[in-house]
Structure formats: C-alpha cells, structure tokens
Length: 425
Image 1 (cartoon, rainbow, N blue to C red):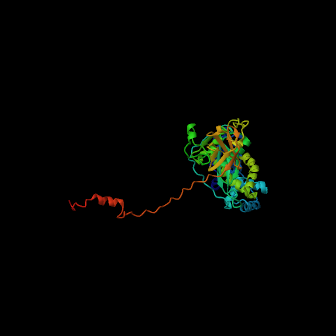
Image 2 (tube, one colour):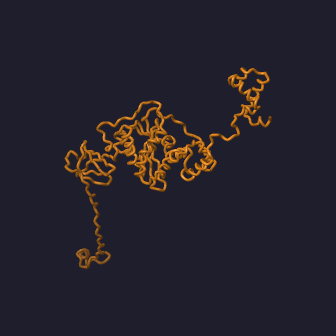
Image 3 (tube, rainbow, N blue to C red):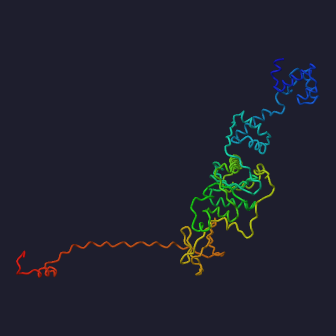
C-alpha cells in the first residue's frame, strides 16, 4: 500500500482521504462533491475506482507508460539529422516552420526544442531583466513610424555587408525596408519615399540621433532670422511633407524597430541563405516577396481602426523633396557658388543680382537652379585662378660712401677756418 501511495500526487492523496471517508460512511457523497468541487456522479466513480484498484485507481491510467502520440524514434533521428545539416543555427520555432514548409515534417516548436536540447543542439537561454519603462504603443495606424538602419552581415560571406533601412508602424507593427550599401541621406530618403508611395504620409517619424537625422552644427544666419533650429536635409524634407521628426534618446526607446531587426537578423539571414541571395539587387527583390509573409505573422491590430496616413498633396513632386536642397545668392557676374563649384546663369537679368535661388541636387546627378519658381539655365565654369604674388626684388645694399678730399663739402669746411689764426685760439 505504501508503494502505491508514493506514486500519487498531493491532490490525489487529498481526494483519497475524502473518498475513504465516503466509503466508511463518515461523509455523504453530496458533501464530498462540494469539498472536491466535483459532481456526485464523479465522486461515485472515484469510489468505484478505489474499490477495484485501490489507491492507484485515482491515478491516470497512462501514468508511467509511453505516450501513444509520441514521435517514432526513426522520425526523431531524421529531425536531428536535418537540424544538424540544414538548420543548425535556427531557433526552435523557426526550424519547426522550415521543417514543415520544406521537408513536410510537422512538429511543434516546443517538441522540437526538447529534441534539440536532448541532442545538444540548443541551450536554454536566460532573458535579461527589463530595466526600461514600458511605453504603450500608439492607438492609430500611421500615427508614428519608427525608422532606423541595421548594419549586419545580411548576406553572410556570399556578398558585401549591407545596411537594412527599416520602418515599422508603432501601432500595427507593419514593417517596410530596403537594403543599401551604407546608412546616409540617400538611403534614408529613398526608403521613406518608398514607404510614402506604398502607404501614404505618416504623422510622425521616430528616429535616433544619427548624423543623417540630427545635426550638431549651429544655426545659420538665415535660420536664426527665421527662428529655426539647425536641421539636416532629412529633417528639411520631412518638414516640407508635414511629417514631425522625433529623436529618441536611447535604442530602447524605439524598441519596436530594434526587436524587428533582431528577428530579421535571425530569420531573414537564413531565408536568404536558403534562397542563395548574394547581391544587393537580389536582396531587395527578395524583400518584395518576403515582407508580406513576415508582416502577416507579426502584425497587430491597432486599438483604433482609423488610418492616419495622409495622401500625397496634389502638385507635390517627391523628387523635388527628396534631394539635396539649399539656398544660395546670385553674385556679381551672375554667378552662383555651391560646394566649391561656380555656375554662370544664362540669359541673366539685372534684377537677379543679390537675389536668392534654390539649388537642388538629385541623387542621380541632375542639378536644378530655381529662381522664383522658374528653372534657370546655367553652365559650370572653372574656378578663377588664384593670384600668385610677385617675387620681391632683392637689391644689394650700397657700399658706404666716403667723400674725396676735393669734395665741395670738404673745401667748404677748410675755407671756414682762418689761415692767420693760430690753432687752439
């Protein structure tokens, strides 16, 4: 009897005590049912089990037996072999998805995790303690979009190291991104332009303090006269589109885009490895088909159904917004200076002198000089040669002049002396 009691759990031992009291007529079935939170019919079934099988009758019949739903050992061995050869660095959930989609082996991620732990292909990892305060996501789709760039070996050793410029909606968790060679003004503007053409203008952008998004220079005279802070080309473009730029003080503040990058650094790298992607162009084509599937798995429903994305205003050309734009002055000779280059205005008018013009340099190399809404013709002229100072003539110092005895000056001094006067008087 004692060996049978050892196999029972604490809850089953408590039930056994009450059932024995019912069997001894010390407790009515109705009272026992209230104590055990069961029906009287279930109490009668427990009594019959104890009468037939003793205390072990309260234990489940399959206890100590192998599960009839367990995986066959041959299938477990094949799973271990596939994980070792194809999915060695895959996490259990991702590996289970690939086993089903590519190898038609259906196994839950938790079961696969146990198999990988048993085969020493996965180690239990402890999560770091969260120390940053939680911020509730925005309520509306398009209210705020987080934006950043991820420097990573996305193509591993098959190609160059790329930067994934990504944008993720704070409320919906929808991701959009493109790959570039570097993180700078052109990649930031280009990925924002692609997002706008696809979804519309968001209300605000949440970015870090990278030099592309925030400058440390002091405001220029024109900016101070307008009462504006010094801004980057990216901030200028966002302002023209009516998008508010918000700067985060830490990576954890924009945790949604950071977590998306963490997931993509694990999954996207392996997906492109399986697809044999090795160039920048192939990576961007792969993103076009991969991101809809990725978003279908990771999107959330916003708390509010309204979409705050705004359509592009009529007459606004994005190519005239997403470029390098600055204001210059027409100097004497109808010349415009910009970045060390000199441009002469064709067909100038006198009233243009001293007036401001807008210089726009597009990323394909085209440059436009616009004056009062009209594009001016111009030609680049070489830099005026600098004046070379003349070499100074070094003249030799004349020798010291000693007057001869017959010099008038000496004769005059002699004539001033009297011949009759004795010396010393």
